[in-house]
Image (tube, rainbow over all chains, first blue to last red; front, side, top):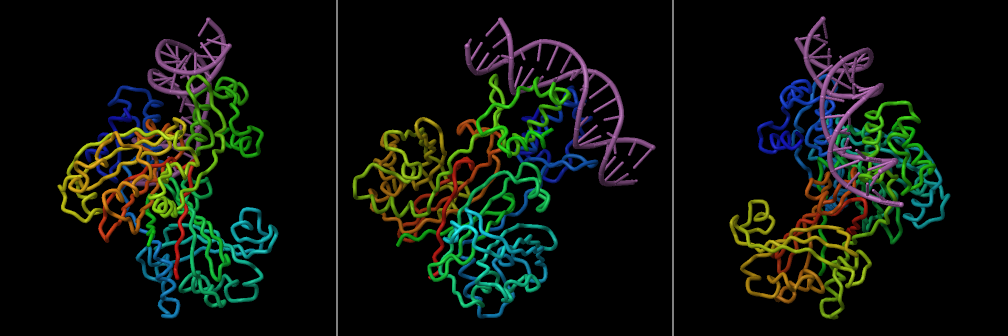
Length: 245
Length: 245
DNA sequence: CAGTGGTCTAGACCACGCT
DNA sequence: GCGTGGTCTAGACCACTGT
C-alpha cells in the first residue's frame, strides 16, 4: 500500500502539496483496516514524502527550494565589515533583505563544559557568554544556533548586550569591533533526527533530519567563538571548496 | 509511555546496547494494548534511540564511534600518490588496513543527464563511465558512491577496468595515472532520510538519516570527476577547514 | 520449538479544523 | 456539526531468531 502511494507521488499522480485521500477513503479503496492505512502513511511520513496536519489531512510534501550555504560566506562577511552594508551571512544565504530578518535571542553567562572547553582550548569552567538565537526569514524560523564567546573578552562591551542584535555584519563584524580579525573557520558537519524541542522551535515536518554544524572561529591562532548551528535539512545544501594547490 | 522509555535510556537505566523488555512484557507493565506499545517504540525508533531486530527484540542503540572525514584527506591522498603506500581516503578515514577494505563495484557506460552534465560543464548526452561502489570495512557496508568520469578520457585505460578496483591511492591516483593532477575539490553536502535501496545496501537502522555529498574533482580548471556519495549519518562527521587569509 | 517482532482486523472515543 | 486525524483496545495469524 505504501508502495502504491509512493508511486503515485513519485509519478506526479499526486502532485506536491495535494491532499491524499482521507484515511477512511483509503480504507475503502484498499479494503484494509484503519490501522493498516495509518501504518502505510507512517512509512511515507518517515521517508519525508508526506506530511500530516491534524483535522486537515495528509498531503504530498511540497518541494522547497534548496538554498546554498557557501563556505565563502565568511569571506564575504569579512569583505563587508568596513562597507557598512546591512548584511550578515544569514541574510546573504537566504537572499532576503535586512528588514525581513528577525532574531530570537537569549543571553546568559555560563561556565564551559568539557566539550566546549576543548573546542576553545581553555580549561573547563572558564566563564563564557552563551547566546541562543533563532533566525527567522519573513517570520519563519529557519535555523537556530548557540554561540559561545569568552566572557573575559566581551564583558561590558556592546557585543554582550542583546539589544544590539541582530548586529550588522554578524559575528565577523562583532569580533572585528573587539579588535580581532578572523583568519579561518573550522566546521564539523553531522546529521541526525531533530530533538523534540528543535521540531517545536523550527517547525520541522516529520521525516526531515537536521544538519548540525559545530563551528570554531579562529583569529590570531586562537579560537574566539564556538557555535552549534542546527538547520532543517530539507531547505539547505552546504557548499565547501577545498583548494589543494 | 515513549517519554518514560526515553527517560530510561537517557538516564542510563537502559544502557546502550541493552535489550528493552519485550512487547508483551511492556503491555503488562504499562497495562496497554499491543498496538500502543508498538506506537511508542515506533516513536523511539524514529528518533533513532532504539533499533529493532526481527525475532530478537528491541534494544537501546549503542553509541557508535564517530569517524571524521577531514577535508584534508584529498591532500593526503595527493601526497601519497607517488609513495606507493596502500591507502585511499577511505582506508585512512576508517583507520583500517588495506586488507580489511572490500568493494562492491558495477561499471557501465551511460550518457550524461542534465544534472551531471551541468556539474561536469559538458553537453547533456556526453558519454560517461558510471562506477557504482559500496565500500566495506571488515565486510560491513559503510558508504556507497556513484562516480562519473568522461568516457572519452578513460576508455581503454586501466581505470575503466573494474578488475583494478580497489585502486591503491583512490581517485586521485587514478586521475594522476591518466596525466591529471587534481587542484581542488568542491563538495555539496545535504542530509535526508535514506531511500529503501540505501537502507538495504548499507544496513541503515531506523531513524538514521544519510549525509549525501556531491563531489566535483577539478584538475586543470576542468571537472574531471563527479561523484555522489551516501554515508549513514550515525557514524560520521565531516570536517571542513575554511581559510580566509 | 518457544519467544520475539511484523502485520492485520474491527471496533471505539477523543481533539482539532473547517464551514 | 461533520469530517479529519490521534489514540486506544482485544484479538488473530505469520515470519524470523535463538536454543
